[in-house]
Figure (tube, rainbow, N blue to C red):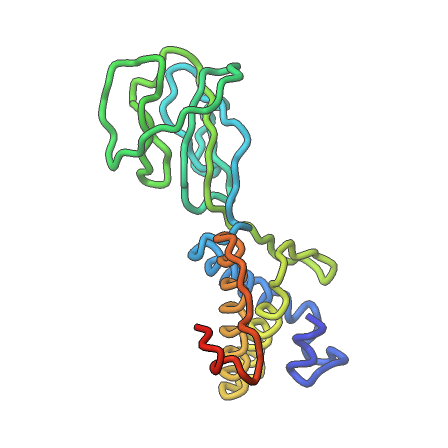
Length: 226
């Protein structure tokens, strides 16, 4: 936010105080999180702790959707998109066996497995008859991943996010507080370039690709190198 104040020509934060900037910084965090989710950046990948599925249960719901039933399984509040669902018998030390995803629920007799999973109405659903005994579920999912800022001392836990958040927050402040569309557009363009660099670095890391610069030599082409 100190950088934002400088970009807004207010280094002493006379008009753009921390309190004024924080809501716009959180808006920038929302956009950054969506960029990271879309590109499946490593910061958004989470393997969840085990979720217990009691015998006779066949859904996992968002905590705010949960009824008064304390046994109703709940998935993490930061879940955005599910990548894989694994199961094993409750208390087992066996590796998780990944379940097949179906578009719609299909009813099967209860068995030793939950058989499959679906994602309907923001609820994870299994065979409606459940399993013959309690099960454990492991979720691999894309998470929101970046916490909101509460005060100027809040730590933002994403490497390489500073440039984007500085320019984007300044653009929001310039547009909606200063009402300077021209300057806001310049700042937004810088934010776009920053996020392109961040996602490119992240994607290169995921691919484990090493880039070697071409040698700079006067006779480079004369040697016939490609």
